[in-house]
Length: 178
Image 1: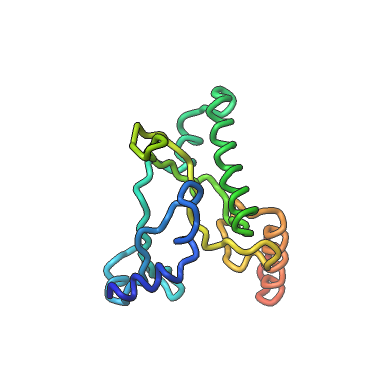
Image 2 (image 1 turned 120 degrees about the vertical axis):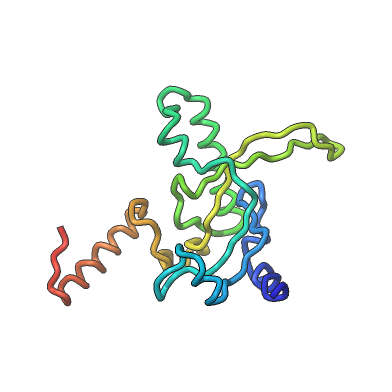
């Protein structure tokens, strides 16, 4: 079992990404049928039967956006979040040659990271926002949208294609989209 776990990590491109930008996977493995059957969250034919272990996050960005009301009031805090997200996306685009593919508040999590001095000694901690969930990621120039993302956050290009596909389906089934 341990050998299979390590193989999954070795095959995982995320393992090689800079953890200052993308939250690293500590462990990734496919669940057996028995393991999946014991978890009510894993259901259906196309269910996702993988266990992914990452460092513990404080929260995802959807929580402060919904509850802390800093947008429009805490300009400095909003700017700090935007600068961090822009740096992460720049890293993915320019260094990795990839797009995220499913950027949304739930895919940005806040971690508490150690601050180290020039000698490598930990001198404190800081809270930072990092990217997660790269399963919709693809190389720049490749066909995007191979994985269906959260429909509430489709980029316009994918939304147009999804609507066109839905309308094609509706014509064959006789359903109507409103």
